[in-house]
Image 1 (cartoon, rainbow, N blue to C red):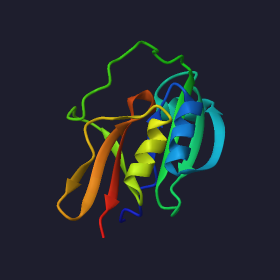
Image 2 (image 1 turned 45 degrees about the vertical axis):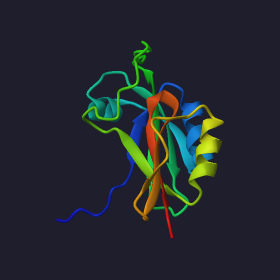
Image 3 (image 1 turned 135 degrees about the horizontal axis):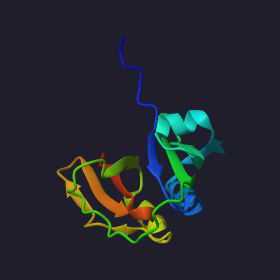
Image 4 (image 1 turned 30 degrees about the vertical axis):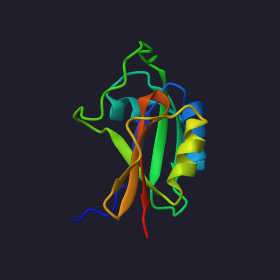
Amino acid sequence: MALQRMDHVTVVVRDLDAAVDFFRELGMEVDGTTQVQGEWVDRICGIDGVTADITMLHTPDGHGRIELTRYVRPEPDLGDRAPEPVETPGLRQVMFAVDDLDGTVARLQGRGAGLVGEIVRYEDVYRLCYLRGPEGIIVALAEELR
């Protein structure tokens, strides 16, 4: 049996509305929102008594999807944690192709995102940057140079 496709990436957040607003500003579209709970959720998470609010979003081309999940129960650890640096092992960022890097960065900065480093040029191929959005999520943006 062969792999069919990557379905989606899940990002766990504390403020679901802020995260949804951020990804909508980026250009993603909401598929829907639901709340999940019950024995099947407990079993897949390995935690008893789970209740989670979930919003699914997709890219305009319909191929990329993100699931934003906020755990209602058990109550999430709301302690302040410094954002992890970009070189920390594990899933660090999600990359999106954009057609106007400067405009996209300006819009997302208007939503509170901040550049991690600088906007850089990679040869004559791309302009790239990392932004830190809500919950410390790192979003990489790439504008192809033609």
